[in-house]
Image 1 (cartoon, helix red, strand yellow):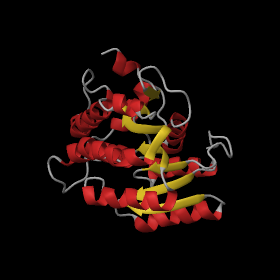
Image 2: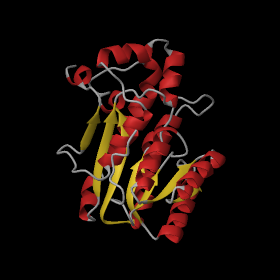
Image 3: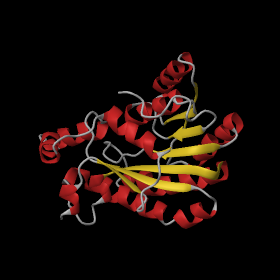
Image 4: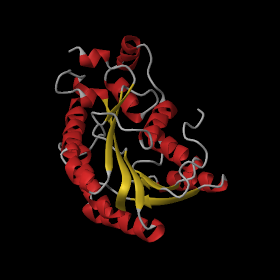
Length: 254
């Protein structure tokens, strides 16, 4: 897909995208780097994959570093931002993309730990590096954003509830952010074809993706949704601080 950001439009800007060694995060990082930004590729345990992406960006003339961090570990967060402070001196854009909760073998409250608690801790840890004019982008799904009014499939419910809890907790910090001149926007998307979440949902509930696709008319793919996230970091923020990607009619009418 063509980069939605103009070449050189982010020259000198410093960007962190969490969970960016693969999938939506990786494509988002790529768009930022192509637009001239210095990017931080964050990963939990995919160091080789993150480095491969950084090498590709560097080979194309971009600027990228990789920093491993488990967002649920406060010490790991400290290391993440200490590294960014040393390497880049600060941040202009923070994209909160990393999420989870459908993985096997995790604690029962892991979804809430990652999608709510860790997101709040992440933003609070980032605040000293975010100056006037910086922007924070929180990535979520329609199934989570509208969970209080529209039911979702049982397999996704723990993730949806925890993502909505995380969004609410972050929105509560908007007055503090605004006082520092920091902007905040939520990007809410429908199911995205080609993601790990979609694969896990399809495995747990065969036919779920095709059913949603038929109802919505179309679903965005990974690169298309990443483009919307990249645009959310630079375009004017909607009145309700939410950028909707994909059809919402089934969610708004319930």
